[in-house]
Structures are given as structure tokens and as C-alpha cells.
Image (cartoon, rainbow, N blue to C red; front, side, top):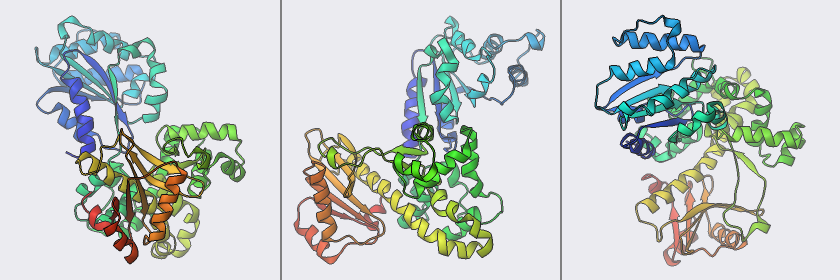
Length: 462
């Protein structure tokens, strides 16, 4: 199983093997497939699953009742008088005695359409003496923003019965490589720049076509699925003013990274911009840029934001600014004129994450000179350090990542200059390039201790 899924599964297994009953919220990005994790969790276990619908509480109970009747559970009470306590107790009574029971409720946010008492009934169930130590209830949701911002308030006092929250996070570049073993590291990096770690989006990729054919089919034609429409649809799912949020994302993609820049470009007051950006940060569409350490803070750019979600970054960089031209010139010409340079731009951004992942893998495998205690980046006014990592004793690693350019000795010296501005004394320098290294830098790396040059050959093993 891929590493990200394995970590999440292990967290859920700890709850499953607990000697106490529990209610666990398992949630995350709706475009990350959770099915493999759940299938592994319930394998060889007694499990019941129910997918809630966006309906009234009465209709929800009717659907749940119908599901139980389909399992052979009988009821003598009138349908409209059967509440959640009765339904849940009849469910557990119908399952094998003495076994650990796993109850999975998908899209559980729909139980809160009305004040249904569903969560209160669950808390009563986990406290039932006859079920002691035998019950794990999993509340599953792809409504990430709702879970993080509204669930606890809606749950009220019953929120105290929640044993924990497990978030399903986006998959890493190495996991995309395993999913598409036929792709080279370079091609996989471009695909990762389009879809990021959202695994459901990966399934739109047709393995019988090359990258250009796939992107033309998915984004530049009106054949279903037309992914040009997906970013706005995703915004409409979570915000009331999608046009405002789309405007902010478009300007972030165009390089306006500070609130002042966004204000002058959009006319949206700064106070409102702050609120809108916080809303975009909740589902990880946008992130605030923080710099490693505090010593070089005087030379650090502050208050900057950027698009974090790869799919949104690709759309607002490659499609959004030029979409009106598409019909006039056709898919092939649009790809060559607009998509190709934009794809290079967004891959350069995602390349930094790939390089950071490479460093993290070396750390996990014990192949770094030290064990990483803290990591990040440094966003300077004159220039940035893409990777910073330190040990618990202060041993320091810095990294520069360049997808588009051949790196030279000048770049190495720039990196050392930025490190000095950041108050860092690097013991190890890792330079990553998608285009290779100058002869002088390659010779220098043979003689300079702690200088490492990493290209596609090394990244093939990420």
C-alpha cells in the first residue's frame, strides 16, 4: 500500500484495536479516494456501512430502516415512530455477538441536515454496557471545510464523545509514480503539477494517450468530462460567492501574493480579503508562506500567500486567462501557445515539492548526514531558499530547486548568500535541476564537501 495510505490506515487501526469503544471522524479532500484505506480496515472484520443522503431526517431514517430490513431485521413499530436509538440498537443486535463491530457512516454531514439526534444516539450506543470494547464507529466525510469549521458547533455537547479525527491527506509524488509506472520521472512531474495528490483526478488520465492528448481531451474540448468546469464547481460547493473567490485565485496565480497587491487588483477591501483567503485556506486551496527560523526575519518577505492546490494552480495559470481564445484557435494551437509555457511554470512550482519529498525520503531511509528535526523554506526579499532542514543539534541543510534552468556556480553562491541573509550556516547544500548542471559546478561538487547535485537520474527513485 502507498505510504500515505499506510500511515492513515495505521492511525485508524489503532482505534480499531482499542479496548474501548470509539467514534472517529475520518475526513478530507473529496478528491482523494478513501476506498482502499476503508477496504483494508474492514477486511476480515464484521462491518456495516451506510451512505447518508442529503434528505430530511425522516427520509434518512426511512432509508436506513429499509437497509436494515434488507438485512433481515424485523420491526413491529410504525415507521414514523422509529428513532435513531431503536435503529442503531436493532442494527448491533443483528450483528454477530462477541465480535468487534465496525460501523461506517459515509457522508455523515447529511445526518445534520436537521436536528436529528443521530450523534446523540451514537454516543448512547458506544456507552452501552453489552457492547463494551466491541464497537468502532467511523464517521466519514469529504466535506473537509464543514468538518473543520462547523461540525463541532453542530454536534454541541455530543462532540465530547468523539474519540479522534483522522484526516485523509493528498498523496505524494512517489505514489503517483507507483500508480503510473509507465511514466518517466519528468512526465510524472508534469502530471503531478496538473492533478497534484488528488487521486480521484488521477483516474481521468487515459494511459493509452500521451500527456498532450490527455490535457487536450480533458481541458480543451467539450467532451465529457470537461475539467475546465470543475474548479468553479468545487468553489460553489463550499462558498456563497464563487465569483469573488475565483477572482482572488486568478490574481494569486498571476503573481499578486500580498494583500495590498490583491486589493489594488481586485478592489476588495483588505479586511474582507483576509476573510476570503482564510476560507480558501480551509480546504488547502491557498496557503500562507512562512519562512524557516527567525534570525533573518528583517530580510524576509512577510504576509504572502500562494495557491497550494495543484489542480487550481494549473487551471488559473494555464486555462483561465486565455479560455476565451480557445474556441477561435482550437485545442492543438491553444496547447502549443498557452498550455505548454503554463505547464512549465506550474511544474516548476511543483518541482520544489518533489525535491522536498526526495530529502524526506533520504531522511526516512537514514541516508542523510543527520536526522531532520525541523524543515521548511525561507522566503527572502532578494531571493528564496527552497528547502531548509535542521537537526536537533543545529546541523543545517539548504536546497535550491530549478526545474527550468541549468544550475551554475553562480547559483550555488547565490544559495550561500541567501543562507547568510537567513541567518543559516549550511553544512550541506543540495542543488536540484531539471535541466542539468554546468561543467564548473559539476567539477566543484567533486571537491566541495557537502555539495550534492540531484537531477532526473536521482529523482527516478523518488
